Image (cartoon, rainbow, N blue to C red; front, side, top):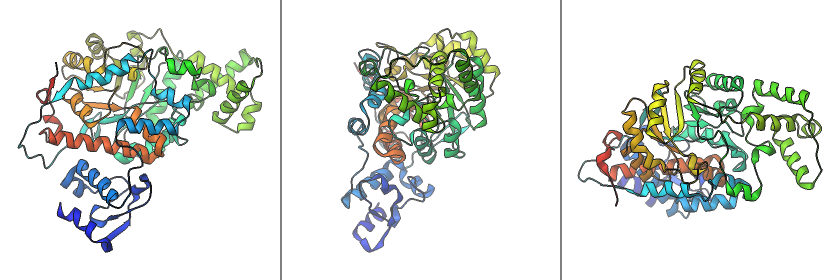
Length: 470
């Protein structure tokens, strides 16, 4: 501890400008002993010595001693408020909103808070192990980045910025089926870092097969099939604004970069020329937005009907309400990658997933965006873990906001958790560096929570470490 403090009293020994300080409001110079070996990460020796929790604390406090404060708010409430200021009203409503009266969103948070930790003392937690093995990858922490679509509404660098941040921080990113950038572009940004692909099952099995094939080719190591969005939920915030980003050509980059989909666009043009309809200022604005997001020259897209045909094709293709358990065989036959079913909330569905050869489950209610009044994921988790009985990994998302949330989910049997909206808020506030700060803050919070609860490894985070409050 003394070595970390000494440079504060010896300004002459200050090292070069700390690369991670681009995440703060103005550059600062950090001490040599606290300098990182790369942007956003410490050397293996240093992190082993103090852990990411204490290291992150010192990073913030040392900068604060020199009058510099975090650019990205640490509290979840402050982070969301900052993102709201940075985003347009439509973009913020799309990400922040839930279904109906948003009871499910509220209940997700309440369910976490119903579980209380029971810390144990005098257990020598000087060294803490937070890594986890999941589907062939060693992860720095038991956290994955959930698939979230239309990230261009948060930041111009969109999915690519998130991909870089995830790779730098040692966590998998699940590429969204409704991404703003093609999966291949994100894969290049990640190098050899782990990534998965989220699949929405469309009305075209040929398109499903093409998307899965592309995911395999660009190095994805798992397929996450989202089950709960065969139709869009009743999202009041979006309806009040009469705004669906896909109709402006946003969030359909996986489609407009797919050869099967593009062939379908040409078929749409041949069969049904676009109806121009009544020209209004709003319609012209939508056309301009569509022309800018569709691949190719903006002005060429304005003259061509292809961009409008692509949106029509997307609407016809997404998604498939008739999807059933029998369809899973089609997917299983077309990939050797692990398949996780996302959206499981009932123990019987968890059992059925195993019976149909699935490799993992994500206990999820889509962050409260689909069914208003649905069961909270933390309430559903124990029954599903019991039904699975250790046969396949069980992950959980929807409502994760803190290291304490990660701890409680793992204590109830989850193998890892998915982080969603918070990293989007970080993206909106500060791009790639904002995402990295959000990730590091969560990892640090979990590391400290685990140690303060008396746990030295993930194996020790079990059901005996939590109690359900009355």
